[in-house]
Image (cartoon, rainbow, N blue to C red; front, top):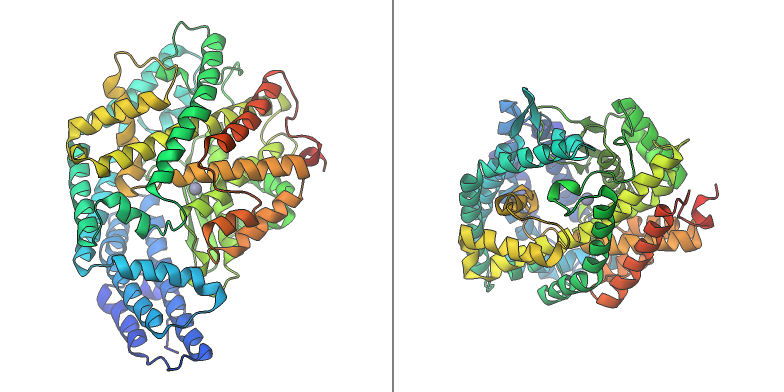
Amino acid sequence: MIALPESPAAFADATWTDISPYYETLAQVPLSMPPESAQIEAWLSSWSQLDMLIGEAGTLAMIAYTGNTADEAAERAYLRFSMEIFPLLEEQQVRLARKLVAIGWSRPDLETTIRRFRSDIEIFREANVARFAKLEEYSAAYQKRTGGLSVDWDGEAKTIPQLQPYLKSNDRAVRERAFRAGANAYLEHREELASLFDRMLALRQDVARDAGFSDFQRYAFAAKHRFDYTPEDCAGFHAAVEAAVVPAVARLYANRRHRLQVASLRPWDLAVDVDATTPLTPFRTVEEFVNGARRIFSRVDSELGDKFDIMAAEQLLDLESRPGKAPGGYCTDLAFRGRPFIFMNAVGVPDDVQTLVHEAGHCFHDFATHELPFAWQRRTGHEAAELASMSMELLAMPYLVQPEGYYTPEEARIAWLEHFEDVLCSLTHIASVDAFQSWIYTHAEGADAAARDAAWLSIRARFEPEVDWSGLNDERVSRWYRQLHIFELPFYYIEYGLAQLGALQVFRNAVRHGPEAVQAYKRFLALGGTRPLPELYAEAGVTLVFDTDTMRELVAFVEERIVELREGAVSPFGAALTVA
Ligand SMILES: [Zn+2]
């Protein structure tokens, strides 16, 4: 319908002036009345292709910048997309969405898309475009500050991710030193980060008020298309975690204290493997890391294994930690090319295996949704996206052991134990981060740095049993400054909890019924965002969990596996999963 460039390369150096004429043309196309599907679909297809071309150009700029935050040209390109182009693009999306919604046309596999369009139209305000651009600028400042942090470790500069192996050291003094070094790196910039957050918070509250919401939490629910649950449900989730998960974590930590033979469990005692005599080193080179993953995924499902092989062959993996690389890990989608990409900071610890398997779950989701014709159908909320990744973490578990995986049977037992323990502990962390954000945006004191830090301490006390933080209030406070979601992606966190509880159900189905659970998982992947959230979960064979009773059942399922593993079980997964 309109002439488009052949590849995202055409937009690599584009400014908004180069891009806007394409949207202008799309906006001027007269849509037939009464609506004719063929014409509207051709128009949607041009729009979708254009979005994918520009989106991919921006994604490539992000990959280049996060791969080397010291590269100034890459930084400029990344900032041009994130601060100039994408906020203005958002405005054009709403403009074209209005045009579509106005003619009242739909088709079944676009109903969820149109519902999201309606919500975007409702909350859109011209005045907020500049605010979002400013927020992007602040996010970039947060990323630059935290990505550039390094600590002196015996005369050598280490990044924060590079401290991780020392947090797992069997020498308690080394762990304490690594813990304090990591916390201090953030505390040195506490005032700067707090002031950055003040500005972000004020802007967000302005965004919400202009759009007619009482606070940014309500706005965020609409903006994130959370049509199927409310802030009240989330408060219920926090209460359920407190009732069902916190006591289980208290049991884990009591066991840990006993195993470590310490009088009280300090925060630097939480990461060490209590069962291992030396820290696990699943791989030594990136090649070993990748080859292990290829074998593991092909055991989960041969088709998924083939997809991961494509990623390895086409260099869609940037895995090792290097100075200057942005922290964290992500999977991103090169939507036009039809390929996902994984970025992470691997240093050779078991967490790296978890991260890769997690991000690969997102990639499998991307691959599956590339079959869908329109860009919007491929997009899901994070609740579904994280169900894809967190289910994969669990489904891959049985194959982490040799010959496919990285571990001897004894090492695998330790890694499995650690993962199941992490699942329970992470639910308490998720509840606290979500409760904290809810508090910040619904209380006037949220704008006061000292009150915010105090609120974090009191919320953490609800969710973190058995750990002795005495004398470490500042270090405890530093934890939220490390949580990039709170700065950059507000309210993106409860999704991890909902998805984790969904993933546990996927895994329980696999333990009980074998391969059928993976088939249901793949059917869920293929739906992308074409159904409402509860239906997507239902396709995977699971439900959204906010209530204490269901949470208790799932916690019991995890604790049973933990008990079996502690008793020395070679595989706690049952016959359905371990038979070839
Ligand atoms: Zn994820």
